[in-house]
View: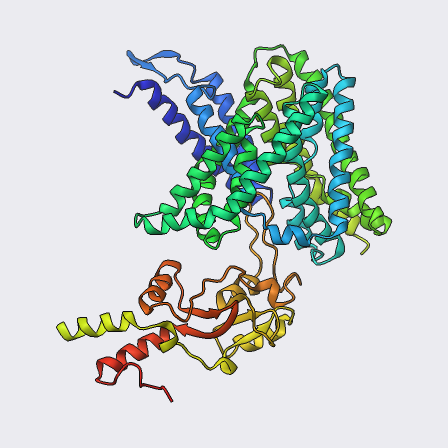
Length: 409
Length: 167
């Protein structure tokens, strides 16, 4: 017997998908990333639900109408959103080609390393300054590490400068800083002491070694089985199983399930059949789970909405500082990196600006830190809100900044 | 009908090397490092190119089809919903320069001692019209759907499958 509760959740899922796609499309039309539209969709929908769908009853021409009681914060809905996170990392992994990663130049590596260290330190210090604990401050630093290069690439393309040293350095750097960001996240997420750090470092190394190395050896054989099963989309089923199993083992090894999803993606991405699998995975991910994740993130703006207005002003102050720090961190970190690899001052500035946008990993890191209970209560609310503002603001201003620095070229 | 059944099952049992195009000198080959102009010039006459490390020992490293070129020739439609690293190869933006940039790296191949039925199944499974025939990583010929159709049709017209075009 399926309960009414479930249908309430399914109704919310339907509303989520519709809002996500409508607002995503509107943002696309005004030449902004669709993802921001989906987050905004979450903010809207979350608001509507708090105001309207919290189980009120009212009288209409003597008919008693009961509005369904909807909530984004049921375990069932959160499960869907968290699967969305796994899909996001799985797809990011699928897009990484190991052979290309090996080819990325020195400059990209310097830029990536500088662009991770600086924001991490600055974010951590701002956290401490605002009175957060060490653990919470580490999370704040981590949120600032990984670049989301989509909007930069599009702007560079519009300006016809993708095929420059700056363009290729940014592209390469963004791949590496994703990888570093994810590993650091896994590492710092569970560190409590120095002994811990060593032990977790070993676990991550073992995990990468066993699951990536052995995986690469056996993946062909495993996918061959898929070929023998003459059932529709057997490859996809096997790939998804690998994704889920890897996430399980990564989580069990204490290094966060998202690493498992990422490694599973890298692994399957190297296979001959990757192209077909990618398309199918994207169909499911982009069509269902990932928009749910972004809307869910947007909706969490209303969580703890009872809190008084003054708390919002202090959150806003913190968010402004974090946004400034995130931009300065990349400018200095990536700038030093590119200077180090022999670029001119102007080029270094351009690279730094190109690396400013943050999106999916920042959101994933704060969502994962919350669901693992590392940050809770009002702190979680503050950090999540800050992250949402950070992603929106950095993504929106980067095109203008890039255009400004390329103006005199 | 019965005769047809016998014919097709004989056809399936043949080895790839018995039906493949062995004229290696005539295969559309290009070196990985050669530039886009060369790729386009070959594709003007053929609909695919096998990419080799160098033309001396012909180690196969990739394949370029018309479809691969479509994605770099057409204006880059950059999806608004993308995570990870987007594919930025494009002629318009100068980000596709050599054969190696455009090629598909993972090539489905067949061996000379494979049966035709297995080669056909690969074509179905991976939606391909042609397979390079590989021996010790080196390309020694190709098997195209076009050839297979011609050979099979010839056989239905009372020509022995193998003697057709053998000389």
